[in-house]
Image (cartoon, rainbow, N blue to C red):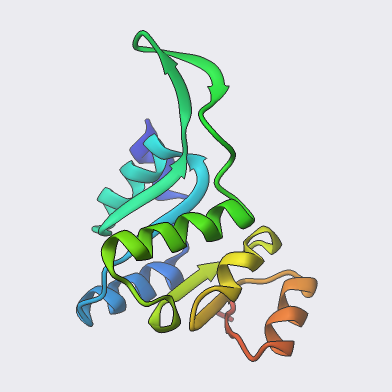
Length: 139
């Protein structure tokens, strides 16, 4: 069921960008506030290098209903990107990030080439002010 559900959640413009990055030899990572299990499944499905997501607490092999740490969004997502970059020797000034959420402003601001995807008016305004790239829906 998860695979069927994921088919409807993939933005085709972003998928095209991911494929272009892969053709260019770039590692591609999914950073999301979704559960890590879903993030990993999606990243594998579309051939990404890996995924980071929100971790649920597991006690004696059972989900407790609590989180292990914070939701991976906002400054926590930006920090996770910095930690990943440190571990993998990535230069964030040479990296790309894609987001459709104001929650990801810290992540977008931390990379050299940020993209906003189908932004709402506030995110579009911020992107234009900062000369960030925009991916808009096909007309």
